[in-house]
Amino acid sequence: MKPLLILSVILCALGGSTQAADKPKILFDTDITGDVDDVLALAMCHTLADRGACEFLGVTVSKNNPLTASFVDAQNTFHGRPDLPVGVTRDAKAQHRESKYLKLADSADYPHDLKRNEDAKDAVELIRELLTAQPDHSVTIISVGIASNMANLLKSPGGVDLVKQKVKALSIMAGAFAFCNRTNYHLEANVINGIGYMQTVADQWPDEVPIVWSGYEIGEALPFPRVVIQRDLDYRPHHLVKEAYLLHSGPEHDRPCWDESSVLWAVYPERGFFGLSEPGRVKVLDDGFTRFIPVKNGQGSQRDRFLTMSSVQQSRALEAIVHLTIQPPPAK
Ligand SMILES: [Ca+2]
Image (cartoon, rainbow, N blue to C red; front, side, top):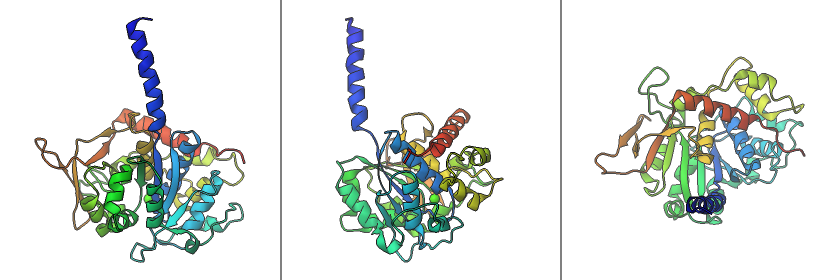
C-alpha cells in the first residue's frame, strides 16, 4: 500500500470513530405557543434523531400556557417518541402567551398521555437532570424562545458550573445582527418578551461555552414554502405539523424559518449551511437590542458568533429545512 493511501485509510478510520463520538446530543428549549416555527423546528429534531444524526434528550418549554406540555407530548408521540422527557417553566414571571394551535393537543386525532403541565417536570430541574447524566462537554442546547429557562438554569445552584462542565454549545435564536425588517436596529421578539432573561444569558453564560446566535435576519430570509404545507403532508390523514401551520399562518403564507435555522446549525455545524461571524460578545441592551462587540486585536471575549448566510447557503439551508421538517415519522 502506498504511504498516502495508508494515511488516508487511517484518517478515514479516525474520522469514523470521531464522528460517532461527536454525534450531537440535543436538548430543545422552545416557547411553543405563539409562533408556529417552533412546531416545525421540533419536527426537524425528531427527523434528525430518526436519521441517527443526533441524540434527542428532551424538550423544555419557556413560556406559560396550560396546553404546552400536552401539545409537546402529542407532537413527540406523533413523531414516535411518546416517552421523550418534557419540562415546562414554573416561572410565573415568564410571559404567558395565547396560542392558535396548542388546542390540537385536545384533539382525539393526536393521542398522548401527558395532559397537564402540572404532571410535567420543572424545566430547569429537567435540564439539570439531563445534563448531569451526560458526558462532559457533550450537550448542544437549542433555545428558540424567550430565555427564561436558560436564565433560571444559570441562576440555579451550581448552574453556571454545570453548563461549563456539560454543555458543548448553545444554538440560540434571538436578536438581530444585520439590517432586517427594514431597520438596522430590529428589536427581536425572543429578547424583548423577556429582556432580563436574555441579559442574564448574555452576561452570565460561561465564557468557555460557545453561543451561536441566529438573528432575525436569518429566519426572515428562509420563508417556508406554503406549497409544501398544501401538498406534501397528506401521507397521514391528520398531520399535526400541517394543522398547526394552517391554524397559525393560514394557507397563503410562507412563514420564516427562524427556529429551524438554530436546529440546522446545532446538528450540522460543519455542513456549510451557514457562515459564522468573527468571534466577539453579545451585549443585550436595556431596550432589548443585541449589540455585537467583535474581538479587537485578539482582546476580549470570543464566546459569541452569529450566523451569516450567502444566497447559495440560503437555497441549501431552506431545502434542508423543508425536507427535515416533512420527512414522514417512522411507521407505528
Ligand atoms: Ca420560538
